[in-house]
Image 1: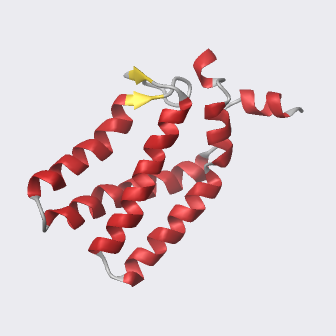
Image 2: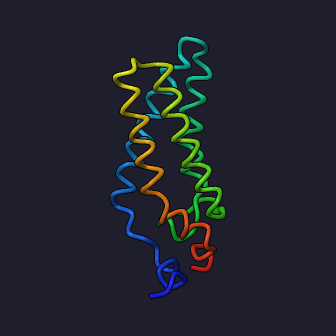
Length: 128
């Protein structure tokens, strides 16, 4: 099988999706936690953005229900936003023994996402 053939099929990302979702949950909890001491409206807005953006904007072929279709690179940026929010907020809100594993989980997520991101940037999802 050539690289073009392996990219055209959506990669099996069950392990990556578990890591990705775990980090999303951390971002949804840690970000408002870190912001709540400074501004409750910002804390609420952070949850709305971290949950709402990936819900509204997705790449066709990557999700079953697409509300607003975007190219694959936008989906990748949304994942990176979630990862950055999870890591930064965990270090701001939690002790090192809790934030450290979040950072390691984010690093593992970056590794497991590579195949999916290659597929998302191949342009194949948009052709489906």
